[in-house]
Image 1 (cartoon, rainbow, N blue to C red):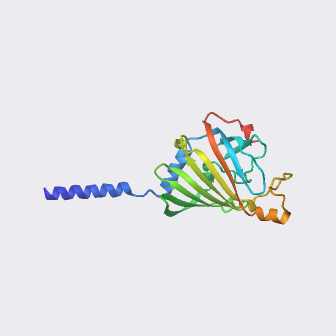
Image 2: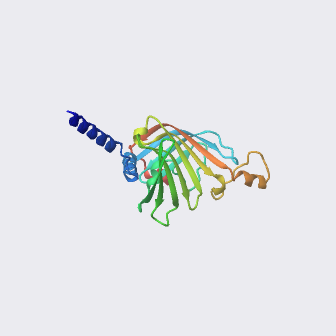
Image 3: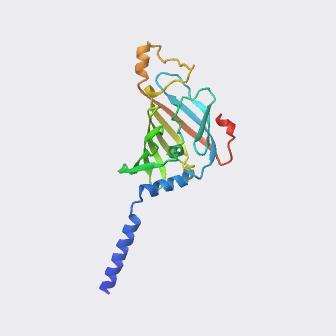
Length: 229
């Protein structure tokens, strides 16, 4: 009888250890990709708030269009959407668009989130490094920090709600260094305080922030190609 209890106890321990085995970075990324792959396209409505020291921009209603594998367009009722060129990845799925693949470094956990660093294998890729902060249980990327060759470093922070099953955020906060941003040709902005150029340049070294709060998504109903032109 005693040996039977010992055998049962050992079996329980082995089963518990096997269940508790941490999934590898590759397994985790594969599950996240599978979740993201549920979305072929979407059209979303939202409110966009721009917080950049050297421009005045009111809260605006926006429409956001996405189509696999990485097409994204933001239409702002007020005109220009201040999103740095080359870093329009306010959709986290765009971080995975690299046909050459990645080398993955597991950084363990920080504040309950699994941290993975992705190094593109393509030496000519614009993205140099992405760091993902992942909720393993829900298979959601909560934060991503990306360094690019041409457009500096930017960060995404996502809050999820009713669209979490599609890995689509209810709120995205996009943070970037304004000193790395190049204004589109022919576009100028008014400075908030009318200061001189030297002071304006100083302000441009600050961080900029764009926040989009999504109110609704239309998922997998098709998005016309001309939307992205």
